[in-house]
Image (cartoon, rainbow, N blue to C red; front, side):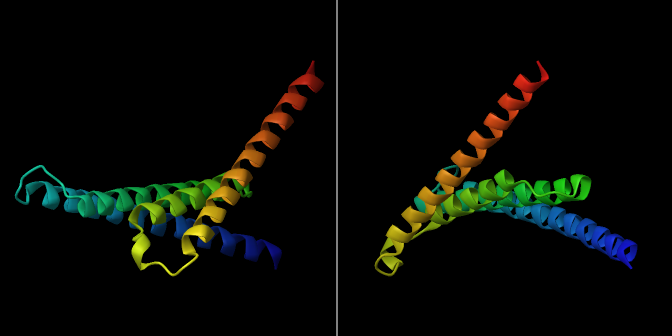
Length: 144
């Protein structure tokens, strides 16, 4: 029974990777389309602030998709999740949200919550990187 489940899991993860690649491709095409439309709309080659924010948001969305593809690919190859990649995706997603955010439309206290989230993700990333560096340093010392 276990080999069948592993084959099924492999099929699902590969399917997810192909679907994610399709989504990233479509998002990239849409980003390019919107950029061309915005650039060719009078005044030509001048973008308004809301157009820039929309473009930056879409750009970061494509980056989130690429990071998710990397995470799925790593899972397929090594059968492990990299916590650093997951936290990186979360940081990019929060950064995207902050960029496209309209602070005037937020409920009271939402900005404080977002600030706490950014701080927590930054701290998590720092701890993960530091832990990985310490493990690498200790591995090098034990091999000497």
